[in-house]
Amino acid sequence: MQRIGLIGGLTWISTAEYYRRLNEIVQERLGGANSADLVLASVNREGYAQATSRRDEEAARSILLAAAQRVERAGADFIALCCNGAHQFVPQVEREISIPFLHIADATARKIQSAGLEKVALLGVRDTMEQNFYPDVLARYGITTMIPNDAERAYIHDSIQRELAHNIFRDETRRRYVEIMKGLQSRGAQGVILGCTEIPLLIRPDDTSIVTFSTTELHCQAVVEWAFA
Image (tube, rainbow, N blue to C red; front, top):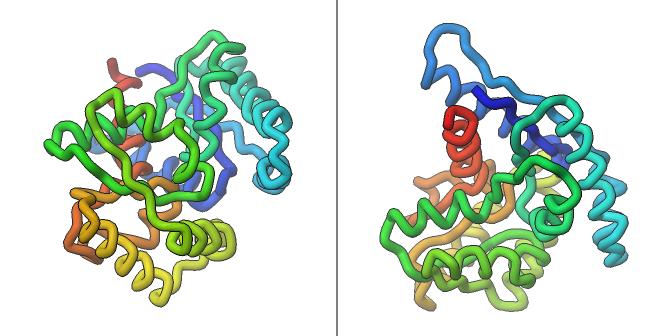
C-alpha cells in the first residue's frame, strides 16, 4: 500500500470524515484490523480563511504548500486535499513538490461519466461555484457544469461558512438545499455535485430524488484505489 498524504483542517469536520472513510474502505478491502497507511498535515483554517477572504492568493497557496511539503517529508507517495475550494491552488503547489495530488474533481468526474450524465450542477463555496478550476476538469470528461443563481449561491456559501464549517447541520438548511437542487433539476441538471466536503454531511442520497455525487466519498474511494495501485 502506498502512503497517503492528507491535507486537512479545512475544516476539521470533513477531515475527520476523510479519516473515518479511508480506514473503513481499507478495512472492507483487506479485512481484519487493517487500516490505512497515511500521514496528515492539518492546517489552521482561520489563517487560510482570512487569506482567501482578502483575496491574498499567495498567502493561501503558501499555507497549502507548507502542508504539502510536510506530508512529502513524512514519506507520502501522493496527496489528497480534503477541501474542494482549495483545489484551485493545486496546479501551483504541485509544481513545487515531487509527489502528485489526486484531484477531487477528477475522482468526481469519472463517476459522473460512468453514470452517463452530461450536465450536472455544482454546489460549494463561492470559489468552487464561480471559478473555472472545477468546470475545466469536468469538461475534459465531456461534462457541462451548471451553477446556482446569484441568490442561491449566496445562500449556499453563507450556510457553509456559518453552519456546516462549524459542525452545525439544521433541518431548515437541508430543506433549502433540497429546494435549490429541485430548481436546478428543473433547469436541466441531471445530477448535483456536493462540491463542498461538508455538504454530504447535510444532504444524504435519500433526501432528494435527483442523483447526488458526494465528493468526499468519491475522493476517498479514489484515494484507496490509488494507494493499492
